[in-house]
Amino acid sequence: MDILLIAGLWLDGSAWDDVVPELTALGHRPVAVALPGQGDGNTAATLADQLDAVLAAVDAAPGKPLVVGHSAATSLAWLAADARPEKVAAVALVGGFPAEDGRAYADFFAIEDGVMPFPGWAPFEGPDAADLDAPARDRFAAAAVPVPEAVARGVVRLTDERRFGVPAVLVCPEFTPAQAKEWIAGGDSPELARARSLTYVDVDSGHWPMTTSPRALAHALAEAAAA
Image (cartoon, rainbow, N blue to C red; front, side, top):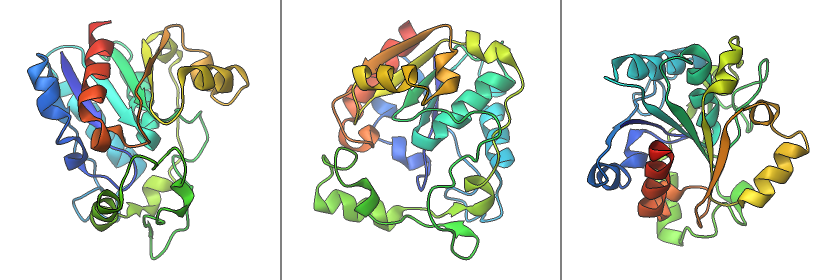
């Protein structure tokens, strides 16, 4: 199966470099989607530009792909399901929950000179970054790509309720499936609460399993593709 990989905030397509060969070895065709504004120097990129890049990858796939979004990019994966419900086989949401209609994509941290830079590790202390040692943190911070303001503050627009029929897999890294189920039942993810097919896969890692547990993540995604 074609598996489209969408990186979260501050990451470019190279974030998936250790996952791609694992998925290839498992018989899949992984593609790391290049997002405008994440690695190409385009600080004027918008959320619409990023969605267009994802939809172009969906349309270019020879079959129905599995669309994978990490962290904030779970919203991009879900937007793809909304825009192409008949062409997306399933979505895999890694370490995040898609925003509902009318919400900002990722307006989480301060904007400086038109971009949202990586804020350092303080906001991520605890389960998010527990499996990242000091050298790994240094590498991440050095490679982090500031997110264009028009991406971070872009408004999510969902229009087609057929998205709720697209199978969704929630990959749980720094939290457990039990926690995720509790959060969804409590109203923290109105979108996933309405998904008609939602399954959970546990990956024992922090928030960035593509860095610290690429093999386990690849197997979780292959399991989602098989399902």
